[in-house]
Length: 228
Image (cartoon, rainbow, N blue to C red; front, side):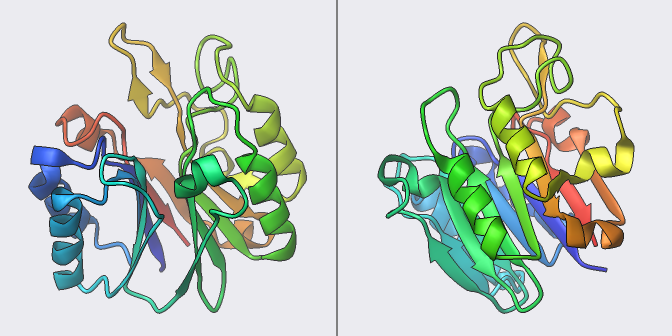
């Protein structure tokens, strides 16, 4: 069984980093994708502790210390790729890790800001497969992943699916309502996703949210687990 943990740790984790690390240790995933990671003192501490937990392969998208970015940490050998040349303003929003058996894209996509990262990802998975995309997409499908229609990029998600990527959570759970983030008004949104290429669907064993971590205020987002 190959286990992934994908989680928005909220503004780099701050004083919650030790609790975040305890949660990561409990999950015992081979590969971890953290969005809203920050290249600051908390981030350095988090990376050192992950190294002690045998996550020997670590890659971070380029960013300033106060910028939300992406960290991929793996116990399995892999190589990394950055995307600064594709989308200069949002180069920190995507990072890739290439494994022998698949290509992994960790994302923290901009919220309601014009960007062309979905076409970048689509072009990537057209030439790099099997593939997985996971992280905080900051969007979803209107009237499905939220009650209203305020999501940007719903059509881009549909285009991604037409290109051969499938929502792993929906593959496992169908139309079940589940939200990974809630506003101060109590409105739920499913911002966090795992997409897998069609050739990986037969080996998807589980994909779910662990809401307890959010409810315990380790982050304002629920982490996701994928098992292949």
